[in-house]
Image (cartoon, rainbow, N blue to C red; front, side):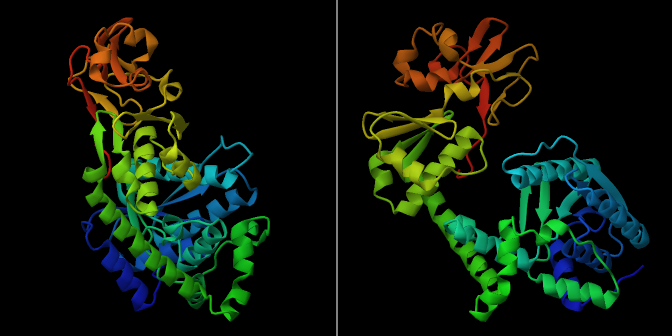
Length: 406
């Protein structure tokens, strides 16, 4: 089967993937819906010689999912594309099911992509998804980051991800499939008004009549992405003026920070909290602002924020978040730490009260006790070998991953 598709889609995909080596293995996630089926056909037509691998994720949440995965498998066989079905069997029902399913889906796809030696995995999100996401986040009161267009290209879970079809609406893609005589699977949940995205989809005709078309909303989301990029650029320039890194902590000059526009303050605090905690999502803005104004120690996002003399605000890891975290020295600890020239019999742990009690000169460091309790330390069984922040043992035994703004 050799699909014949419009030149604009083929040239767009070919241009997007041009930087990749010609023999690179390209992965594509195919649910069976119209967008992902159109992506599969477009990739096969645009790159007829490229090694292409497809995967369908079955979350085990719908009876129809097994049949849809088999349908995709048969389509891939017609196209000469290797296909895998990735089954997720341990996804419990409960709150935030869609978010948990999405996280599990990306985990499964990333692991599959690495097994297949894929250089990237392509996802079938369309311009319509951009418009719907914009409306959903607008309804939640999101700021610039939430209203920005979906990322077209990014790296996560050790894999590069691409969304080649963001310039094309779902209507465009379905028309393309009909012209090819190609069907697709319809997920019944796409018609269930219990989901916010479905309600936004159903409101589209009324919004179109007001001039809020999918294309216009998508263009606005693109403009928001440009604003987001400009903010990130200027924030990187500001970091040295308002903050510094103290091993695993971030120290803000509170006075300098508060002179900045509110958007910068929120963004920099959120970046610091995310780097220290390892969490991908930022805390709510109201919580951020309470912390910057507070004159007492507070906890937020798995971190502790400690006011110090000289208008300094120190952000450290919260001890309770790492109290029981122990890793072998050759493995990363708390996402950011690794050991240099390690022995496998050594372990990395939070220093804790017992470890701090073995560091007689910790007060000379000027660092508060709360920050030192959660600081990383190296142990051999019950013996403390090094606690760099508490001025004990070898100072350069641990290496910290640099923050994203450096």
